Length: 430
Image 1 (cartoon, rainbow, N blue to C red):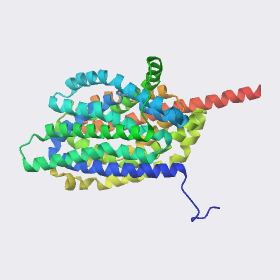
Image 2: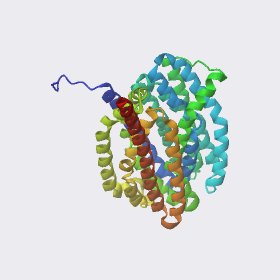
Image 3: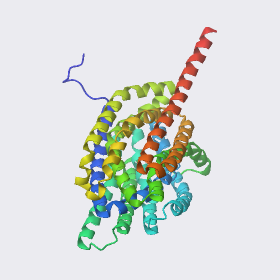
């Protein structure tokens, strides 16, 4: 038996603590950004910002064509190929950006008629051109399990946005007649640009420059990464469709209060994401053997994940009445919205665990189809239920979609593992 004095945390525990610390700092910075922005813009302005950001968020996953996920997977399995894998990731970013911006412009025109076009442009630059590079750079370290550096780069964009939010607050104090929403859009883009430049510099200095690929290497890489892009895009559509649909079908004020409640839930999920992200390299290694190995590797994460999700759901629900004291009376409507959304971490946890298992087992196309089907179900139910119940319909559609995707993934994994086990038994009997 190991004494308490001699016990040392394992690599997964260390990586979780490192990423958790990074995410805690990121969450703290996000909380300050959130408080400054929602109080400065008001519920209607924040609703416009949230709706535009939601549309950009759906398309941002296609900028890198899934290269950042392949980067972690490939380097975790063979660290000597980092230079070529990093070059492929950057090349995929360059290929994806032009069509993504075009699709973003078309969808924004259709869905964001109430949002100023200047804000659409500035958020498009920040989210689709600058942020993907900073994000890919943070993933560059994860294949090496250098979670400390990854966490620092993960925090960098939010620190830049915090600086931008402080500038916004100071400018508004100096000149209350400033067009706050437009100013915030450009400051947001500038923060994303500074984070991208810093991240690219750090990766080049710490890990080395990229090795640029030829067309023959790039095309298969994009083909392998595209399912992750569709998966991420479908996941963001599932998460954020309610916001831009509320802006389109209800009002920007309702969108603002609902988005504020959703933001509190997002911040509470950061420690859970830290645990799952820290476990990703280990899951990829297990998944290289078989889907069953990936499933076994996810089991140790079950109890801490469920305990946290249950605890944080109860805490959010109980603390929700305090929201107007922090955000102002303009956000009184966020209290019931937050209480409705408080249990999303618990409802969505089975899907997240099954998602990681499927990714690790190289069945990303199945994950893509599940996420796409879930997004379509969510959009359909949201369009149906918003006219009936406003934001409550949007929240109910989210819970229904979580259940649908969980059942779909569970059915696949049960069939996969049971089918393999049954086939092996038949072969042994012979």
